[in-house]
Amino acid sequence: MTTMTRRGFIAALSATALSLSATSCSSSGSGGGTKVRFGYIADFNGSSLLAIADKQGLWKKAGLSPSIKVFTNGPIQIQALGAGDLDFGYIGPGALWLPATGKAKVIAIDTLTYADRVIAQPGITTIEGLRGKKVGVPEGTSGEMVLNLALKRAGMTMSDIVKVPMDAPTIVSAFSAGQIDGAGFWYPLIGTIKQRVPGLHEVASDRDFTANAFPTAFVSGPKTDPALTEKVVKVLQQANDWRAAHKDEAIGLAADLLQVDRDKVKADAANVEMLTTADLVAKSQDGTIDNWLNGMADFFVGSGQLKSRPAPSSYYDGARYAKVYGK
Image 1 (spheres, rainbow, N blue to C red):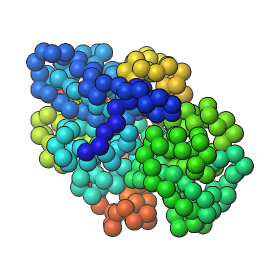
Image 2 (cartoon, rainbow, N blue to C red):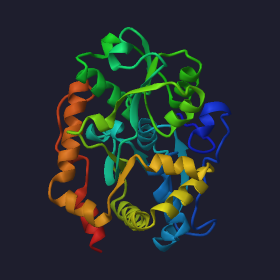
Image 3 (cartoon, one colour):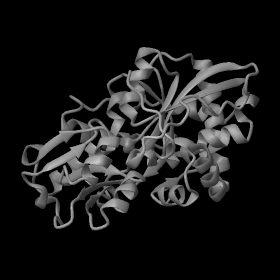
């Protein structure tokens, strides 16, 4: 397993590679409670519910003692789940193909996100302008997802560009230094790049693809204890409803956890559509979330990441999510 701990938003990616303690935010401190190892990505989606659960004492109320660790993307967390190094994690939409292959279980939908972009250096104003040029992308992530979608819409494929697999910190430094011509990437890190390359162009956005929904999710290992999962889901549901009712305060708590400026978190949160737990339960029961997941799976089949579209119920336990909410 490869992890990278950093100070804040991965904002530290940009220049300094400062580090954030890999394990923190234990609401029960050194006291008792079932230990829970939880991964997250350093953005509003990935951090806010964990910060709320800590501040509101929800972990302790559930008899849990969390240890949280920051990761650069979802696929690395799912790798850690499979290796037994994590119990739960957070992923963006671009990593949903991994639960769909049986490598993890989606235990809760978090938000709908619109943070992904294809960016290009000054002077390149269209996706077609990247033909034959070097484009960085973190493979298996929402950055690769939005790049694939944009290429397809333009009648292009990955073979029309020079795809350069890179992790998130490397994309920040490589784009800023002009070593790559474009990137399939996401906010808040694009904001970091814009400070260095203010003339960059956003040549595609996941908001361009209105037929698709882009859910973020919390995941567990495929064989995580059901009783433990239900306790964690309950905490996430309670934190989710607190966030929906106190968005500004949630932004502040996430900024505190990530140790970054509140305005950066606020800008990131602007790319997020939050849903109440009751709404998520209703959408789990009426087929809406199944439709979201089927839409993503169809994309992953087209990109070659899935061989066929599995039933959403094989990797999203919406019935358990609803059951926990009813308790």
